[in-house]
Amino acid sequence: MSLVSSTVTADTVLAGRYRLTEVIGTGGMGTVYRARDEHTYRDVAIKLFATPQSMTHADRVRQEREIRLLSMLSHPGLIPLYDAGTHELVDGPHRFIVMELISDPTLLRRLADGPLHNYEVASLGAQLADALAYVHARGIVHRDVKPANILINDEGSAGFARTVKLTDFGVAHFVDGSRLTGDGTIIGTAAYLSPEQVAGESITFATDVYSLGLVLLEALTGKQEYSGTVIEAALARLQHDPEIPETVGSEWRDLLVAMTSRDPEERPSAVTVARVLRGGASRVTGPVPLGRTRSSRSSHRAEHRLHRAAHRHTRRGTFDAVRRWRRRNTIVGSLAGIGVVAACFGSYLLGAAAH
Image (cartoon, rainbow, N blue to C red; front, side, top):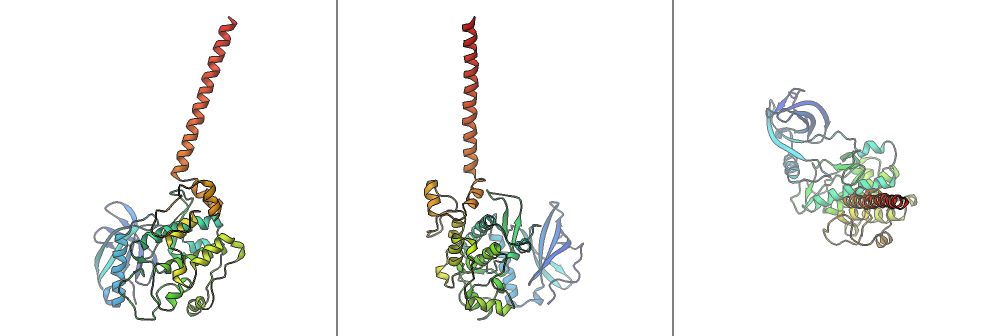
């Protein structure tokens, strides 16, 4: 099927405002362009969907679902939606959405150079789990968590040296929502499907946790766990669990084994994964706030030793650390000032005594 009209050119202006400049990528239901917003003079990304006539009913429902999903989501780990509309082309009306333009490389491209350091994986994994916890709290399952849908920015934020964003909600699913495909139809990317997706069973939040576990394992080892043809990759996870090497460390093994359990009920929640990757408590029940607890540092480290280097790396950028640093400098500066005043006063007394 043709995703876009042949009349779309580099100078096409959508809705009298967005001038398309170049193609960024294509997907199953549309094409993504770099565009110039002629009202605000900023570059944006525009996803131009195929015409309704060229799509099935399920495609059209997924198209509207993606627009609805993106319009209701706002999180640092997700790409924000700026605008949406319909533009009439020669072959009919095309729906489009306007998003923040992200030119960062994907995790897939980063992994082409080899595995990441364990503290980098812990940092990126915590952010991804945060984003998943946010969408899960709104009853949404992403269903396609994979390296190609993860963007990495080298500019740090919120205490992280690098920041990540999860993209592409085109196949996302509302829990307890209506099915868009017949029984047995698989939606997602074969190498990262959960066992229940392969078996055509009910999809839950645990589905995303399983896929994230495979992504983290690949980031640590540089090796895709389930490769081969689509059928081979999909069925392999029903025959054997992921092989987690001893070299990743016992803490990583415990977490990844839990995340990639064949039984969805045995997998931790995204909230729990985020806390563990930050070095926090893993025994979590319910949507508690993320981040550090107020437990003492000694008990904190005694309970969870998952990559202390990663925990220190993350903690250095928090507001608590900044406040401690400022208080320390204030105290040191005050003591130094008192010392200078005392020295001057002592010199004065010695001089007076000499006279």
